[in-house]
Length: 411
Image 1 (cartoon, rainbow, N blue to C red):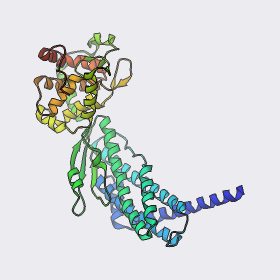
Image 2: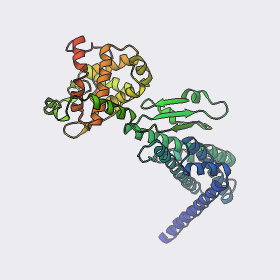
Image 3: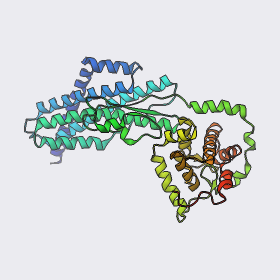
Image 4: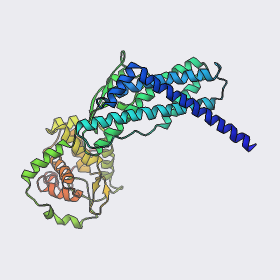
C-alpha cells in the first residue's frame, strides 16, 4: 500500500514538473519571437532600460504566461474541469512562482543599470516573494472555475498582468527604501496609463520624495496599467557639499569634543537637547510618542520647506534623522531618538506653516547634528554636543519659555 501511494505521489510530481517545464519553454520561445517583448528585454539587458520598460515587459510577459497556462489546462483537462482541482492549483502555483522569478530578475537587472548610471555602488534589492498574492489569485480562479472555465481563464489573464506589474512595483519600493536608509533621497513617480484612468489613479499620479511616499503609490487595482518608477539621484550630494563647506569653517578638533557627555550614558538624546527616558505615566511623554507616530506618516516635507526657507532635501534629511534613523550611542548600541514633547510641538508648528524663530534654530541644529554624525562617524551624543555649540536650541527654548518648555496641551 505504501509503495502504491509513493508511486502515485511521484507520478503526480513528475506530471507537475513536465507541465511546468513545457510552460517555461513556451514562454521563453514567445519572449524571443514577440517583437515588443524582445525589444524591451534587449533594452533592459543592454543597460539602457527603465522601470517603465520593465513594467511594460512584465505586463506582456504576464499576459503571455496566462495564455500558455490556459492552453495547457484546456489540452490537459476537459471543459467541465473534472480533473483534480488540487493538481490544477499546484501547476498554477508553480507558474506564478516562475512569473515572479522572471520579473524579479528583470527588475534586478534594471535597478543595477540605473545604479551604475547614477554612479551608485550599491547592490540591487530583490523584492520578497508575496505568497498571499499568489494564493489570492488561485482562490479567485478556483471561484470562477466553479461557474465557467472561460470566465476563470479571463480572470487569470487579468490577474497575471496585474501580478507581474506588481513585482516591478515591489522592486521599486524595495530599492528606494534600501537607498533611503543608506542616505539617498529617492523620488518615486507614478504615471497614469490606459484609457480614462480612474479617480483613484488620478489622485495618486505624481512625484513623491522619501520619506513622504504613501503605500498606495505602489498599489494597483485590476486592469490598472499605471507605472511606478524610480531613478536614483546619485550619491549623498547634500552631505558631500556640506563636507566641503564645513571643512572650511571647521573650528574644532574631534578629540576636543565635549567630554562631559561621555559620562552621561544613562541619558538619552531626543535631538536638540538632553532628555531622560520616556515615562509612560507622564502625559507629555505619551502625547509626544503619539505625535511622533503621526509625524512619521505625514506628508509634510513640502510644507515645512516652504514655511522654513530650507530646501526639501534638507528637510528630508532632518526628518529622517529625528524620526526614522537609529543612532549610535556610547555603548555601541543603536536606537531611535526618544520622542520629545517640545520637539513634537515645534514640528507641528512647522508643518502648519507657523514656525517660531526657535523652531528654525531647531532645524539648523538637527541638520548640522545629522551631518556631523555621518561625516565623522560620531555617536549621537557627540554630534549633539558639537552642533549645540553653533545652534543651541535647548537654551533658546528655555530663554523663550522657561525651564518647563512648551505649554501643556499643544498636542
